[in-house]
Image (cartoon, rainbow, N blue to C red):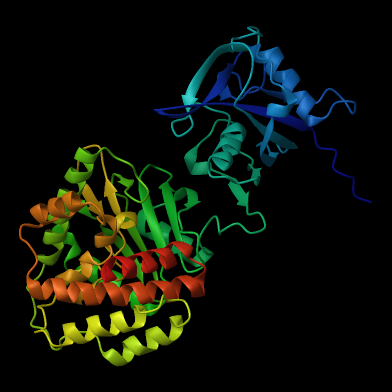
Length: 454
């Protein structure tokens, strides 16, 4: 009969302090004759016995090691890690978070601790206990359960080339890592990946991950929902996107069978939901206009072979949203499409196809950058103004700033085509949003129709 596991239980406290320069956590440096002397670690310890629960234990350890008092009501479960050391001993660690406490942290046990300091969660120190680092890495990306089984010969200190962290997804979680074949493809392209984190939008067809290289570097890995999106994005990256220079990512590798791409990361924060002062907003929209002009001039224009998208396909879109539009919306959309059909076709240029705030980044060097080219194609330039126009609704100063950056006003024919394209996109968005549970798309479509009709 096999011997049952009698693994120790330990507790770790993540004292968390948020500020303008990021999230910081308190670490202490082990000293003396203790295990892992000289390495940074969280305040931690073992349960005193069967009379003590894990919450009581972490509160006791916090006071004994740092002098702070944490109320039980302020303790939050962070992550649980099943750990095995290089020597073969296994244990289960409960990591807790506290954002409120009484007292100022200080070294309370100088015989076993010779330093205590706040570190940014995204810039942890070295050397650090690998077990503790695994718990913090899992916590940082929202994992609730992780396995960290080290191998004989692994160092006690964290080493990105021997990272044994394995995150266990919870019920309802997005995939924390891509499928095995995609991970192997990525590592063949850019080297070993030490950390994966999900970067998808909250919808079923979005599958994007951040990949942190073991030797440094950051990439994004995407699996396209179908071959059309994969072909569009890879074609753009291999043709006109390089002409944007540092304003766009660079394609590192693509696999048509996996429908996967690996691209570089670019600096900046998403403009989706961002709030800036009016003068900064105008500067941003001038930058967006200049970027749009660069996109549209990145390859020679082609003559259009037709005026606009067919009315038959528009009717199919309307069939899918009938009952979800306001009275008069259908007639307006048809009238806008007929008006555009009577106009001469516009030249076809490279377009992003989904130019909107969530695909635009704004960085500290006042540069606008663009990501996500899976909807790119050759189309009239106004195609890229459809979703941007929602962002400047009610703000003529932002529209003017955009056109200043773009370098010219729109012609009357472009304005007519833009109205028809915006109406069509609104109907498409309402339909797609209802079918895929995306309320933001539905609301934007309704808002666009109301704006156009006004």
